[in-house]
Image 1 (cartoon, helix red, strand yellow):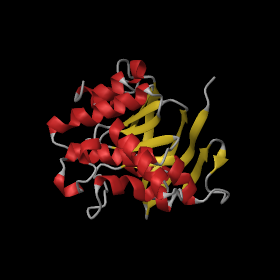
Image 2 (image 1 turned 45 degrees about the vertical axis):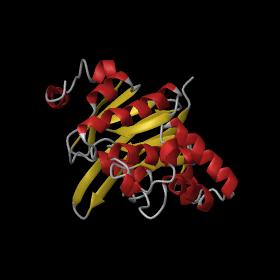
Image 3 (image 1 turned 180 degrees about the vertical axis):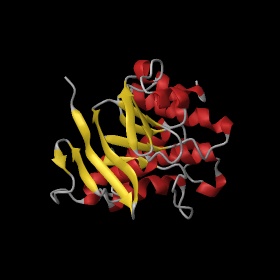
Image 4 (image 1 turned 120 degrees about the horizontal axis):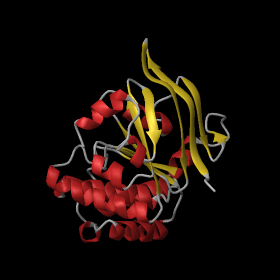
Length: 244
């Protein structure tokens, strides 16, 4: 039986008079890999930023395990520790080593002691193939390596769900594959993920659910076999022609 982890209910977001998101509604179940696709400017990244409380939604609800996250019963930091985020621009601390980047959040937010934080950081850095680089600083490693460190940092917080905001868009083409391989391994481990992506191969082969957005609205959602291979909306078909 499906277990909802995250429920987005009638979420809207406006900036001034401009409606960026309009009545967005979908559910992410435990173990799902949900890919959000659509043209630039369709509201995908704003949606992720609302879910992670980096933007304040205008109307609607976000339910985490059935609890409305705006009701004040859960602190923002506690929620964010359980709903991790990986950004397209890595957001690593340039003045810290790879290892310290993966420890700092645990120590400050999760109140982990240094020994436990280090053990967990090393475990996840090993998982993403970055153990040899623990003493390097972000400026000394490639874009693909930075993104793998960012994923390890998010995993070290031991979240229940990971949000990815176009995690490969800032990478050179030859580095995209190494990051996608890490994400595919997470999917095999049944990590619940919500991924904004232009990587249609990933959406097709790894996702359990695909959400197609245009102009701040969800036009189509369902399994990849339906949305990507037999889309019902003409705008979905037109969009996919460019990628598939």
